[in-house]
Amino acid sequence: MTMRATVQTHVGLFRRGATGYVSKESGPDVLVGAVRRVADRCLFIDPALVEAMFFAPAACERDPRKILSRREFEVLQLLARGYSLTDISRSLNLSIKTVSTHKTRFMQKLQLGSGADVIRFAMKNGIVQDDAGQYR
Image 1 (cartoon, helix red, strand yellow):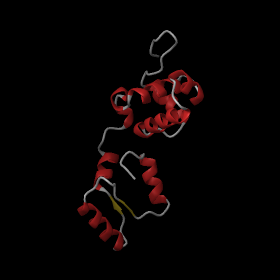
Image 2: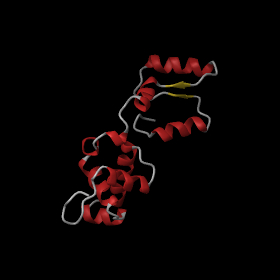
Image 3: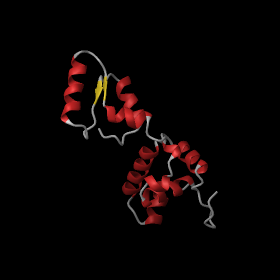
Image 4: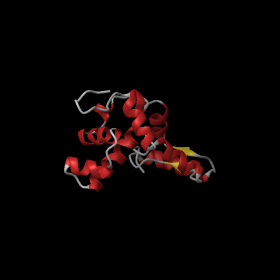
């Protein structure tokens, strides 16, 4: 698992019985420490994950235009305007699988869990354009 997974994903792992988490980007010293802690029947959470969860700016505090790719941002805009994945794939000349991948990635990056979260986020951050190209 990578650091890109959402906080909810990590919490879910521990709720389902995981006793440790080490990201694949961590060094061998972190892995050895994790194995020792889990062997001692203690929980272990990678320090990099703790840093990302508690000290990184919340997704809602970051400018989505800076953290999303151009395509991810386009898909976010179109979904927020009510377009279906099929409509978006036709509009952008992309496969529906590619559009779905962009949706999954931006939802992870922004820590959004549902379609309603997407709409709320888009409205709160003024990224929904009307037909005249104005942000509302």
